[in-house]
Length: 403
Image (tube, rainbow, N blue to C red; front, top):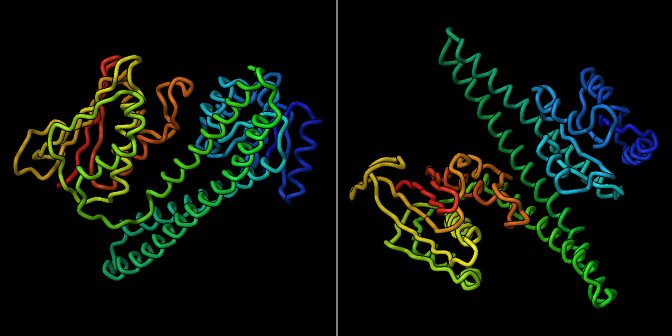
């Protein structure tokens, strides 16, 4: 069941009709207070929420829902005809919404998103149910005292079955993410084509405002495409892959070839002070780590100061960032440092969290996923990553890999 929240009845009716055409049941509330009362009485799979309402606005309602264990996982889509500025859209995502759509609404796109979030919510509930079942089975196994061997055998068999089911669900979720991303990229591609046609065929020469609007539209669609691609990269990290002996010197060489244009454009310098090790790993994923770290060092450089990126490697005795150097150690410590803008070290954990950014996207491009991908890859390789920095004094990323 979907809940529509809007203080204007004339806005609720067409939304309900659109959902009915696709056999989707819905309730409606005409204020934030009424919506909260209804949510307490029954379970909803999705909430379509108007932002601007008298009394309690949409942001306040979602903040309350986010604070409750029972309602924090209900996906919320904001609709707004007035609050279209970036600060309101950013606030919408900050409060916990999964999407922010400005009016007028494209019914086809709305239905596509509604169905996608409903499917994801359903699969999350199924995964939660499976996890709950696993937790109960583990608890039962701990309490078992009689016929221990037989019970352990039976429970283990059940756990294997549940694990296979979890893997199957995870595979389904990855497949679904791919399909949804593909379907989302197609309308974005068409938007780019049509906007370019308008620019090339119909734009009046010298109309600076029209040119700016079109270029901003194309930039936004490019950012959306990059976000979808990064999300796909992040979801693919759960797929199994076979590690192999990988020479990090070759990996760095490939990365520098890919970043050659950016390095020339920034007049940057990449300094590798030592030979890099050969480790067991997945080459494509290790390349992604280095591309993210070196690319970030080039991107977050100071104005009018050419970036210098220094890469070092040393063998250490323990899996610890401050471990002493050891010729016979079982781990490698790799450091990527730069002379860029740096950041407040207070936020060191935040930078490795998906969608978290320390700078506004107008100042620096990006999706906030790159370092989250790097961290997940390093953890898959049984490694560690952290960062040291001060604002205005560059940044240093430290990675530990097993030998």
